[in-house]
Amino acid sequence: MTPGSLTIRQFHERLASREFSALEATESLYKAIKIKDKDIKAYVYISRDAAIKTAVKVDAAIARGEKVGILAGMPIAIKDNIMVEEEPCAAASAILKNYIAAYDATAVRKLKNARAICVGKTNLDEFAMGSSTENSAFQITKNPRDKTKVPGGSSGGSAAAVAADMAVAALGSDTGGSIREPADFCKVVGLKPTYGAVSRYGLIAMASSLDQIGTITKTVEDAAILFREISGQDPHDATSGDIVYGNELMNPKLEHIREMTIGLPKEYFIKGIAPEIRERIEGVIAQLQGLKIKFKEISLPHTKHALSCYYIIMPAEASSNLARFEGIRYAPVPEAGLTEKLLERYVKNRSRGFGPEVKRRIMLGAFVLSSGYYDAYYAQAQKIRTLIARDFKEAFKEVDMMLTPVSPALPFAIGEKTDDPLTMYLSDIFTVTANLAGLPALVVPPGFQLIGKPWREADILGVGHYYERINYA
Amino acid sequence: MALVTKKLLGHLAHLSRLELSEYELKKFANDLDAILKYVKELKAVDSAEIEPMTGAANLKNIFRDDTIDFDRRALSASDGEKIIGAFPESDKGFLKVPKVL
Image (cartoon, rainbow over all chains, first blue to last red):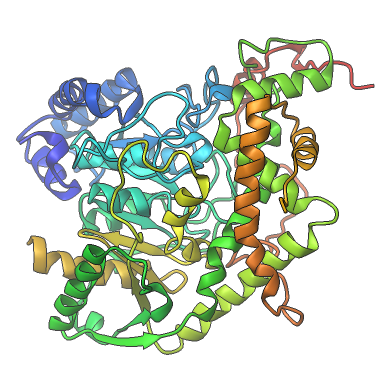
């Protein structure tokens, strides 16, 4: 038993009963990371000093007989596009190689208030652009379940850390599937909250109308615990919702779950899905039917346009958000230096600082926003987005949530899809809709997705929890 | 017929403040061409009567008085110092930039 192999609840029980101290657990975890991460390379930065300080404080509180919160001393990995004060935050990009975060993200501050331990920062695709973590400027992360395969992306480092027991839980971010796809590939639980449920303050922005910080955990119950801690309105994020999640997230009642109907959107069960995935989903449906949950086939007619819609809106927003990286506000890329002429400084820093996928998406964004193309691409995509959101709203009159596959394909080999960007983008076909419509979505091993109504994380967590109990009790 | 010619790509690179190598010009022109040909399918959707979704879902306007609440400021003075400390070039707390005009 290593501390990293425990769930949040198990870790907390053993800590509270003094089976181990927070310091012992932290030291043990770092030993495990030193050995395992040489190969897996999930972490880009280890926060040892801060972690030890927090562990010592938690142990002192327990020694004084204080009852500590469930996340006290909990080792949590943080995706490296989420800021932890005074620690490097590079979003896996050369352009931020020398940047030290000036403040904590709200989600991180909430974890620190709960006395959780931020173990370190995890690897990602550069600026969260990718579905395999191969676009990191620093290192390749391997899938702990099969080290020839990618861990998925862009939160591949976080998913790998949790799957390899190098953290009890992790924070990731999800703009088009970046928590859910790696959670699926690494066989852990991933939750993308309702847009606005978790503050984006301190998350390095990719596409502001799509981004959300979310959780990567070993169990659905852990997802509920961690999500409750990081969620809530934040005055520093004007898009955060006026919501307080309470105990409804925990201890779901089976009678309540049985009253729900799960929709099966026919547009997600298309020909191109790998046969193993199709069989897997059929198995999941059969098991949930065994719990007496009702299913209904429904239609989300504009699903086939979702990927196009996403790959127009997201690059447009990203190209705008990444305009701030120009070698003036933040440390310039060393090779570019501090040139005299303004235009030269912009061009040299950005050209040497950004990787190819980032450049592709910035230029794609420039295209769809440029004069002559704006109406046909960007304005049209915004209208399609309305239609996609409307499809869900209509369907939610008849069902409480949707069940879908997560990805059309099984985890692919490292290097397999790096030549053709479009092939990589197709990994996202089942995940982008939840971001476009702002809906919560949960991914549960062995690999299915539940998409819920706005603010109804309790519903999808409830179904996920009972599925887990059938299979992993 | 290529949607994205090398000339168009050169224009997009300039808009994005990027300089591309010969190899990148060729590769990105092909990549962007393939991507745009894929997303072009959106044009066929009849959307004449549809209101565009200009931002995220679930948004509500939040207004407050235009005053500074010193207790709820996002950043403390020392945070501000950290931000200024990250400037590559600064002068008396101001960010130094190359001449614009």
